[in-house]
Image (cartoon, rainbow, N blue to C red; front, side):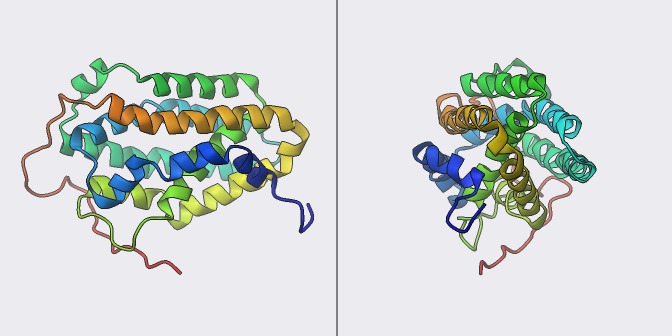
Length: 242
């Protein structure tokens, strides 16, 4: 790769610039930063996002199996541990705060975008193709880092909004995205058509997923009565950006 040749991942993003920008600048992102996402929309969004949890772990497991180096497998295993920890705890606290209990979550059907993304992840797993798996992982993580990095210095008081931003712009998350991009930059050119196909479908589904949050709010959810935040909440001052 020369100074004049773009990174493979940058070229993929450029090829889908309109859709990528629609994700990063989505209404949901703007309202998340302002703390104004309606509770029913936020609850529905998180219920749908949580549907990805098990399959995302499986996707990371498939990446571990398909990776072509021990170092990559070790890093991917660490990422799987991170996802299984902080993010899972955040979801459970939010469900409690927003009144989205387990029976309500269980009876809520998958949104069209959720069903599509689950199918795409399972297709990538079944392919056992490292570039295909990485393309889906890169879109899922890099697109979220891209919008999270545009957040204002001061985030909303409500942990439901603030911590979703911080989860996607912390040092560990940035390192994760850098690693995934570097891996796709390395192996993607040899599997260009496969990587481009999975990348394009994934970013379109990310846009649709944000749209579906407003099309399918969880209207039965009711926020818990005001009082102390759920156990485990930590108030962190927002980092000032360089």
